[in-house]
Length: 131
Image (cartoon, rainbow, N blue to C red; front, top):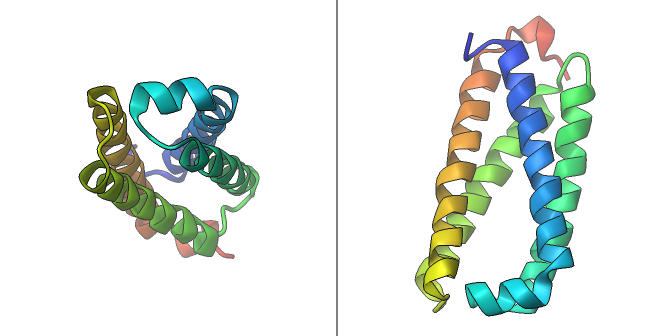
């Protein structure tokens, strides 16, 4: 069940939804988040725009029948890169304690999404995931 194409599609939809929500959060509350998290407003704005682009891609993939295997791999790699980037920011910047927690939540949650997507795309039957 956890590795079925339907579950993978649900994970991709969830990824798209969280991308929209976090992108909106970063763009609508840039100044306040910068103060609370100890992250630069520019970083929050750029990441907000990137999240909207990522969410649009994820939604397009989730809607496609069949889901394109190559683009699913883009999501997997993008999520692992986001988790590593969040970890690098956590280690390299001096965010507030709330900012540290925010970045660590990103590391764990995005790595988990990447792992679920990776397991799912590897197990997709070729006929269901033909690009």
